[in-house]
Image (cartoon, rainbow, N blue to C red):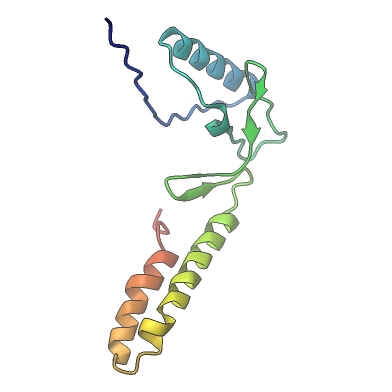
Amino acid sequence: MALIRKILFTDDAALAAHSEEALQQLIDHLVHACNKFSLTIILKKTNVIAQDASKIPCIFIGDHTLEVNDFTYLGSVISNNLSLDAELNIHIEKAATAMARLTKKAWSNNMLTIKTKMTIHQACVLSILVYCSET
C-alpha cells in the first residue's frame, strides 16, 4: 500500500511592477508555475497594493479579483496612500495598552522608586511606541 503525504508549504512573495498590465502578467506566470508544481495560492491571503497610483488596479487570479487594501506584513502596516497614519495609530494603541496594564503593578505601587518606574516605562511602553521607527 502506498503512503500518500500531503506537504504544506507557505512562503511570502512580493511581485513588483510599474503597470497594471505588467503585474497581471507576473501574476499569470506565478499561477502557471504554481500549477506546474501542484502548489495552491490561497486567494484570501493574496493582496494587491498600488502605492501612489492614479487608479486602483484590477488584478485577477482565474475568476477571483484580488483585493486592493492595506495589509500588515511582519508587524508593519503597508498602505496604498504611502501614509504612516495607520502604522503610527497601531503603535500608539499598543503603547497605551501597555501603559494601562502597568497601572496596578507599577504606577500605583508605592514600593517602586521613580527610577524603577522610568526604567519600566522605557522598556515596556517606549519600546513599543518606537518599534521599527528607525526604518
